[in-house]
Image (cartoon, rainbow, N blue to C red):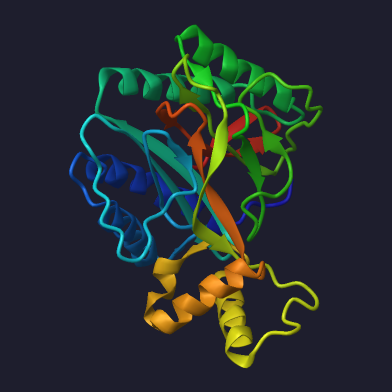
Amino acid sequence: MEQVPDALFEAGRVARRLKEEAYRLARPGASIYELAERIESIILDNHARPAFPCNVGINQVAAHYTPTPGDVTRIPPKSVVKVDIGVEINGFIADTAVTVADTPEGEAMRLAAEEALKTAIKLVRDGARVSDIGSTIQSVVNRRGFKTIRNLTGHEISRYNLHAGQSIPNVQTTDSGRLRKGHTYAIEPFVTLPEGAGEVVESGEATIFRFEPRPRLEKGLKGDEVSLLRYIADEFRSLPYSTRWLLRLGREKLELHEKLVRNGRIHAYPVLVERHGTPVAQAEHTVLVKEDGAEVLT
């Protein structure tokens, strides 16, 4: 097996420490802006970079929400809060998430997600079928009286690529994919209430973005637009980013960024919410596949 870079293990160690900080910060009354900024600043203090903006999903918001410039949202009482964290060192990425619940029902959902994750990791080895992992996650969650989100999945991770190919389902599927030794995957069960739809839909809002340079993408753009795109490409290397990270460029650049998003030059990740509005819990680890098992990196 090709030697695994130390940077991958270090990214995992940083992400693991951040989970405790997320548990401490994600409490009723907390500013989600300050929470995200704190998590991201700790990553930078550890000589790493955020692999994506810190996601803070409250209740029915399942994925892709990060605070925006000027966001004054505070965590309300009786919430189920997901904090999704990515750490990148030299392009090697560790992805992890925790749920902090302020209700007995939410706490039960959190425990269901964590048990499903722990059980799924026991199946990880070279050649393991992703369909078996999805079926196991669904079975554990259903046995605890909850429902998995069928259209949110785990994912393979490669260098500078958060979603590198193989998906890891959270339900029984016909996917014929198999895990491969030496490859890295994020496994992340998402759990909701039995009356939930068990699927997410786009909310119409986007707070996370990504730019991937492609041939002729700059055609027809003005000089300042090209300059901004090149800055984003150099700074974020095709990884997701937040407009919070562009604030230092000034409000004029934020307005220009909005124009580039509208014109399709920059990809926007829509905020994903549970279709019936039920709360969602999440648990996530990044694992390295070995011949006869998994090494949990986070």
